[in-house]
Image 1: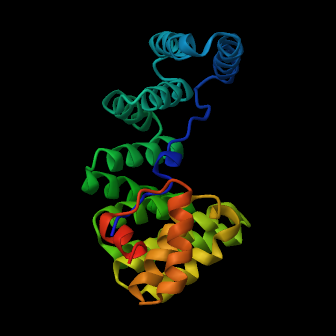
Image 2: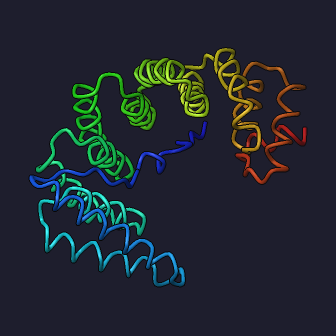
Length: 252
């Protein structure tokens, strides 16, 4: 079974989270960031990242304690695929603001992408201790456990995330948590429940090929070939590369 982490990269967020000993400095720095973003928006795409990188590096050098610049710079390095540099600046951000949600969440997600699962788990757990009602932390932790094939723990944390998302009426996020739980249920071979969770997310995932593949694969494992073929063919027509043994069943 092939597992897809449907939105790991969505864990990375770039936001301005102002903190400074002087409100005047904060306002000035925030204005400078906003001004630079407007300048960059008018540039050609190829030069935007370099311009932002230069601006954030300069601001970090001039104001080494300004957390938003550190978070923005770290997020920029992440978007460029330079995870080691992103981790470095997220860590500096957390040294200044240990309770920073964005830096902690993004740092954990970076370690997940690097497959440093113990460190990712440690950061997600710390985020949960600091913010026990923050669903993204549980969802991130569930992704790590899913990658480790610790399916029961993945289910437990995705279910917690789902409850918090529903309380907040964040239905798209709740659908993502259901999809995550569904993958974990596939991992423990509870295909009936997996199908139930996937279908509950139809509104937000019906245009995704993997949505149809997961349901089709689950039906296939339940020996319901008619239902399985419908979903698997849809996934294939949408460009999903079916595993060889599944593709063979389509041609039987």
